[in-house]
Length: 357
Image (cartoon, rainbow, N blue to C red; front, side, top):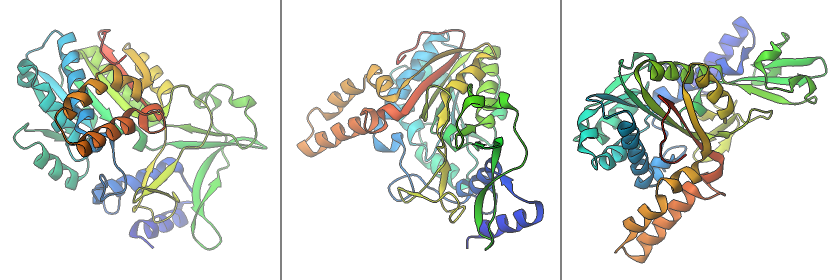
């Protein structure tokens, strides 16, 4: 039994079943046992690998996009360049190297990283040594005022979701409680949710349908949109998810690059859920911001010049290196890999025409 599992059992025994959102929050962010607060999970030696770790091309193309956003903003003297959940710092490092094509962008950009993990902060500092002197924040609300360019790659998928299940008596919230052997187990709560929380068509959904709602994600994108409207800027979101709101269960756990039971060994596995880009876009729009996309990650990267960059990167390399570059392109943009499941969406103010969309 993990330390967090013991803590969860004692909590549930004392207060009763908890929501899936509360369970995710504790598993990922508990100060003593949380997955993200106690370990470095990214990379081949970790539990999962993200796009920046697959190839430098990903971060380089994001860097070119950020330069375009800076240009569209009128080349301000100073701009906050922020990344949400920056992992080991690989994306930001590649972004800044590519950003050197515009020395004005590099001079103006002040790097800010939103990261709660002390270990990842240490790795980010090492990765960015010589490239930037980042400022770290625990919360997005602590980012400074002024023009803002934000990158969020695989950030929103790790925010806690609530799950609702359609039963014979209508919709009820899924909870995490204890079974007869005091093991963690999913159950159904007694209270009925406000149907306005659920996707359209909830009243006609069949028995067994599942709806997932990510209120923290909507609040964060709305807060970012509010800041963009107030100070100007652009935010780029890349994550796996769906374009239209609907029904279906996507909560998943990953350990050592394989799927695992979400209730097994809490604190030892990553927990994520697919991002609802439809709801993110609507939340941003309510604050007066403009939304570009979402489009598939494959289409976004190819429009940003992935194929051309791969050709330049492979020029003069040996056959094995060239084959690895082709494999990276396929993994990042191929329809059977990350190209279709992952999406890209931008939030801007004022309205901007930006590459990739």
